[in-house]
Image 1 (spheres, rainbow, N blue to C red):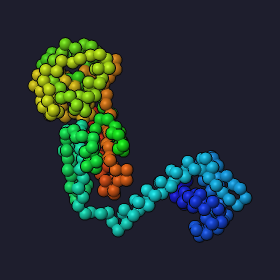
Image 2 (image 1 turned 60 degrees about the vertical axis):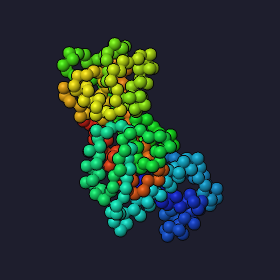
Image 3 (image 1 turned 90 degrees about the horizontal axis):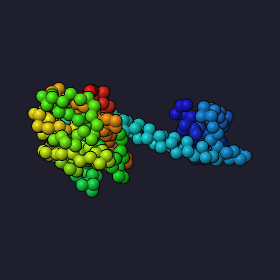
Image 4 (image 1 turned 30 degrees about the vertical axis):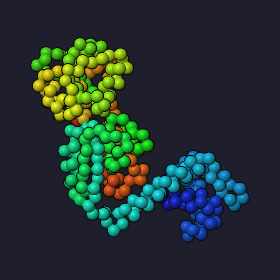
Length: 291
């Protein structure tokens, strides 16, 4: 299957005529017929219902047309975007990092190197749903209503404590944690919401002795041996090697990180930044914490 076949298919579909399509494409009628035949043979499905000299898309043809037409439009946008060179003018890009704040230095470093003219505005704290549209991208742990949501990584959330605490278990049942003292993020934090949902589903209440809205503070408290807490395996992979990790069993605690955008039609620079962010999160996945 090639671009010429797809363009020919779209013209025939729009004109419902081999003759008219041949005139528009400046090729012979037999060449148009042969191209459509080759495309149908490759797909192993008929795309048109033929009545005399008229061709109309059948059900399979209409479905295929919807994908091909959108793809060709996107291709035209890409061609127009790079004609005359990539736009190097200064652009502001705003990102809300509801989760994965330890990755901010890597994100800024990579975007600075690849898009030196991009002005990057970063926010870290949870905002109202009504304010989401002020951002180009939102990194969060749950799909957002009416936004484009792309899952960029999935991570397990471990239980962690300082090695000096003397615990040695590599697996722990959630019920065994009811009498432990925890340090944790405050309610309504995305990670805390994920944790609470997991334990509430099992009818378990945890004893939070210390709470803060700053993930960096939580990491410091765990490393200082103040209490137990929860360690996401990818987004908190910078945790000290003095922290012992254990897996919740029989059902591990997991969460998915999404790259969300309020825009249905990304600008060229937004598309480039989006692709770079997706690549970065995939690379982070490869270096997750192990037990």
